[in-house]
Length: 347
Picture 1 (spheres, rainbow, N blue to C red):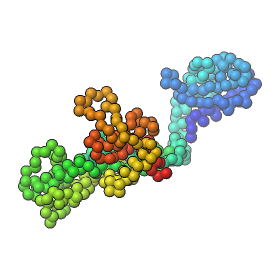
Picture 2: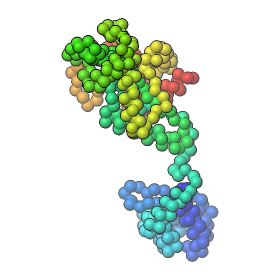
Picture 3: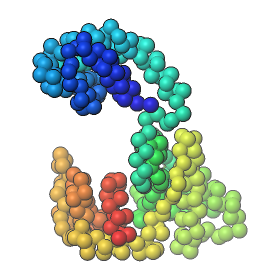
Picture 4: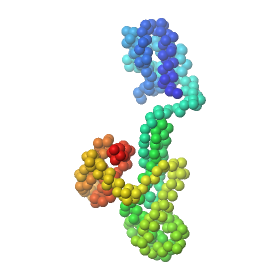
C-alpha cells in the first residue's frame, strides 16, 4: 500500500466528478498531478500541484482554481482535515484522524510488505569489527546496532546482504595481547609476578582467558613464550571472540561471516589487491595531509602507499601503510570503498 497513490487516486476521482462545477474543460493532463511531502517549513502531511497543472491546461488562474478545489476537497474528502494554499497554488494538506487510522489499518491488513522497494542489489556490510583483544564496550554496541539495523533495512527492501565481522587478528596488538595472556598463565600456574610493561593488557578478563587455557590444557608446559606463542594466540583469540559473540547474541545480532586478517596475510591477498589497484592507478606512493583541525607536534610527513579514495566519494585519500611503513593493510572502513575494491579485484 502507498498512501500517496491512495490519496492521489482519491483526488483524481473527485476532480472527474466535479469537472463541470470547477469549469474544467480539459483534464487530459490529470496524470501529471502529483502528491508529495511538503517542505519542512510547512507543517502538513501532503502537498499537491493539481491547481497549477489543471490551471495551465484550462487557462485559469492557479490560485483561484486552488481555492475552488480546496472547498470541494474539504466538503467531500473526509481524509483531509485542513488545506492551505501556498506559493503559486500548491495545496498543502493535513490528514484527518480518520485517514491516519484507515491508513494504519490498511497497512496491517495488507498482505504486502509495507515500505519495501524491492531494489534487489548486493551489499557487504562490515560492522562492529572490534579488536579481538578484549570484550566489547558501549561504543562497539552502538556501532553493532547501527550496522544491524542498516543490514536489516537493506534485506527488507529485497537486497542480498552479507553481514561481516573483520577480525583484526594480526599485528603488534595481537602479540601484546598474547603476551599478556602468557604472563597471566605464568602468574596463575607458576606463581610468577605479572610484569609492569606498558604494552600489556591488565584487564581481569585476561586472567579469565589464561585460566580457561590452563584448565583445558593441563599437560602443556607454558614456560616458553616463543614455543607456545601460536598456541596461546589461537586459544586467546578464540576465547576473546567467544566473549564478543556472546555480547552480540545478547544484543540480538548475528554475523554471516567472520573474516580473519591473518588469513589475508597468509594468502598474500593484500599485495595482490594493491597490485590490481596500482594497475588501475588507484594507488600510488605519496604524502597525506596532517589531520584537519588538529595540531600534532608528533605528526611527520611520511612517504607511503596512498589509496585514492577521494575518487569514490571519500573526503580524504587513505594510507595503506602505517607511519613506519609497516603493516600493509587495506583500509576498507567506508562501504563504498569496500564495494569498489571487490569490483576492481574481481574484474
